[in-house]
Length: 227
Length: 217
Image (cartoon, rainbow over all chains, first blue to last red; front, side, top):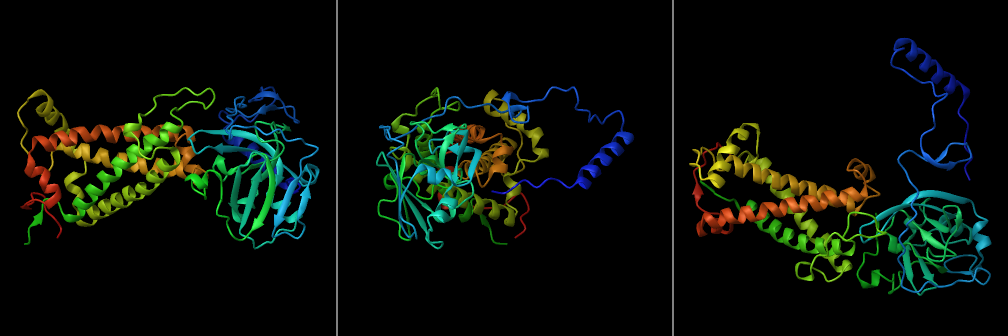
């Protein structure tokens, strides 16, 4: 993971000098005194003691849930992710294997093909990191996904290797719930919702798209499904 | 000087291709709308109205999308060809509503709706016609811009933000469609009132006209 590089002191000093100069020039208009002002935003305090939700944002309590009708009860102990295809280390992987990769938390918009959209907070590992972990062929073209509820998907490699494409196991800092695809789902803010498979149990790296390329795609939705 | 047809072939083609595209886009657009017939939250979903199957095209969301995205390109291309043709020939001066047309609108409204005498005409189209054509064209542009914003909201995210967010872009897209639909009955009624010859000219090109406005070619 990238470490945050602190700003050089000179920049801060430069900025302070600038503020001082502006203050002298327009003493009546420039008000940069923050002490005593209530912090904006709302919600519980974050690690800096400031309201967690930025101004104008709110937490979404009513996340829509769309699935094939049966919500598979996947036992966490028994769950394994089966990796196959053009990879150097095929086999079964546990949730801990995925958790061991750098964790990404992102607030991204989820857009449904139906026309609604909602912003959520998702935590998980980058698909790209996992593909590196299993030694996936760098030049392979597709990733196929198999799910516990018999849903299936496939995505082009460029999109799946996007830094915001996650193997997601958390929402709002809590473990993914069953209705949202526990134990593992795809989160991909560059694609429509139906591409973001839930209850993932199998990944396959390939160069040839299977005839059954996706549950909804096979019925007429766009396979690209890009936003 | 060779006479020019009332409606040049390019304009006629663009007109009828757009008409076909609009019919299909409205029907398939309502099919898409039916998948989430609301401008509010998904949960709880409060449906605004559910378009009856008789006026939708595709039968379900997936097919509706395919019709819509296919014929959207016909709409874009015929619109672009029309605008380019009008600009390069200078024809746009006939139909573009400009500041000096403002004064002519109210007398035409009085003539059409309040039986006032017809104001004298010195151009191919009167001020109200220009206003209607220009508005319809502007609505077409709004429909295309908001349509692209809905199609690729991530790649065009600055545009989506500018338009007030994804949810509002749907509202603008829908509202612009309503505006364009409002134009059509008036347009068709006026054509009907002017008789068969007027209607036929949009297919045949009509008579060679002596233009009142000077044309560059």
